[in-house]
Length: 110
Length: 119
Image 1 (tube, rainbow over the protein chains, first blue to last red):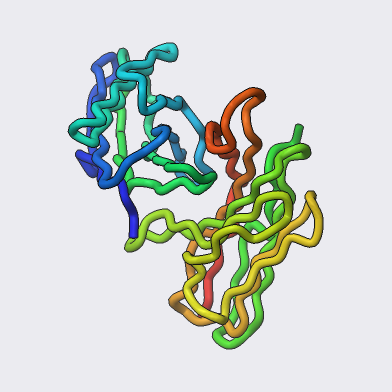
Image 2: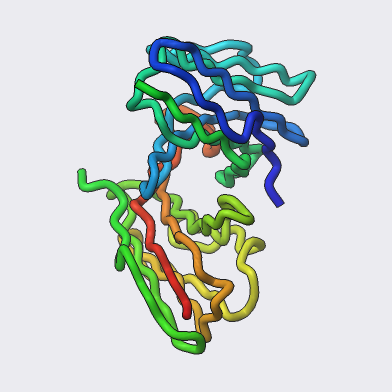
């Protein structure tokens, strides 16, 4: 069974707007990662945040982690049509194994 | 680097036939993962290897599924006999520990996937 649940399941916005996706998980973690999947493609790693970190930035991406609430959020600022994809969170705990969430489908309209 | 290579990209077969999916990980990566993705169940980890040794196969659905990694540059996932409910996209991913980091501090690199249809 999957550990991560993502919210919303689908999100539609206009170019230039910000997109926020949330991920909740159930057990302890060492790290939480976010991946993007374009239609018909494999997943691509975006960013990793460790359990002792609260916020991380990479370009237009901002990730927050709240271990007390077992949740994370991914913010994409100034979205572009090319950001249209599904976004997944993934967690690990003391192994190489990643448990992926259910994903958020993001549609950015030009 | 060419990235993770999977073959075939598409496979259509009839129920009862044997299916073999192939994966070549990125050179130097020592962990390899097989996933299955469907609309209903999302992305599921089937099995993963570390240094060619199977570490966790708890996600393998049943005995019809088997996976091997005879060397560091090649892995196979076999389904025998195949059933219509096995229809899915199967991904292979590889990773390596970041220098100086713990073994689980790493990102996974995914292949393009094999879309399997069992009629």
